[in-house]
Length: 221
Length: 265
Image 1 (spheres, rainbow over the protein chains, first blue to last red):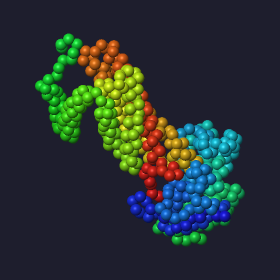
Image 2: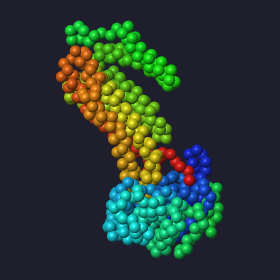
Image 3: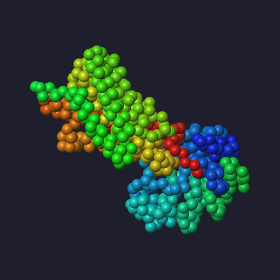
Image 4: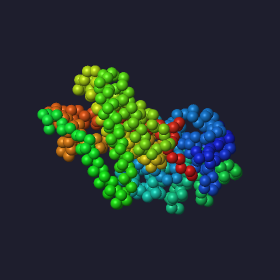
């Protein structure tokens, strides 16, 4: 079964400018899909629509064969997790930030990771030098982006929507984030939809490239 | 002064106060502050509105009927809601009507409690007590509401990324914006709390001054003022909480989507 089935999806900005037009797209469970295309082509908006942060004007969207709104938004977003281009943190320590999702009602049923698990997570993303008690505000942009990725990973999502997660990162940090996304897909079966502006191509996982140009899905490789 | 009554202010003395406004107007003209027109309109409105209110109150006091009192009170709250709406430059969320509803509910609750229960007026709508009390509640807490609403809208816009991050991790709209709501209510409450701190030290409030000038016992005037101060603080807290709770929900649409300001990619 596909994880997403999109059919005839249109999205128009409130000022009347079209953003997505007639998008038909199927994404298989566990697939790695790379979204390419010029800026303003609608890639980020498509991810926001999939995260239910925007509402399409027309078209149908199915998640695991059922309409997107069959699940309550909190529960859906726990499974389909969006990480935005600019890493967003809250005031407090690194630990506070990593455990933030576990303070939300919908995630209370999940066991909150202990410090050891958090440290292992930080190590896996080459954040060994980051202490759990240090203020998250002291982290660099690259470190923050990796923290955001780890925070989402701790929820064990079924789908990761990554909106240009490496655009502000140095080559080393970029590689770490890309490897982590590929690892999640290859080893844990997480479906990954990743928007990328640069020439990134996954190295360790089979993938599909989707081009979004002029609001339309023009090519699927 | 004759006995314990106030010294009467005649038309000539009233006209003399215009000198103050004229001086302010001249300063505005000389220094090109651009305030002289607003000052002139404000002065005229003060005269017209207060005289109209004075005569209306005289008439309503004489009527001794509940309905006109409640209608005048509703009109006062509507005017306050209109002023709040005008001061908060937010047009993406139609918050005017809910704000009016919340203001009517909280002000009514506080004003009736004060007149009926604390002062013990009989009936509770006794216009000599109810209308000035209701007016003070509305007039003072509308500033708090303007501040709270302005803070709520500006923070929701400025911290959109943080809110969406929380939503993306499974938060509902409350969890995603609780800290913003708290800050908004706190910002609106600060002037009221400052008033509680400074009253009697920095200022002798208007109602107490008025009663003392009218010949009332200062101790009694003081008691009334305490009731008024606490009433204003309570009304401000209640109305801010109610209004911000309602308006915050309105800022989030279906699926808890934040409706304010959509950035394009």
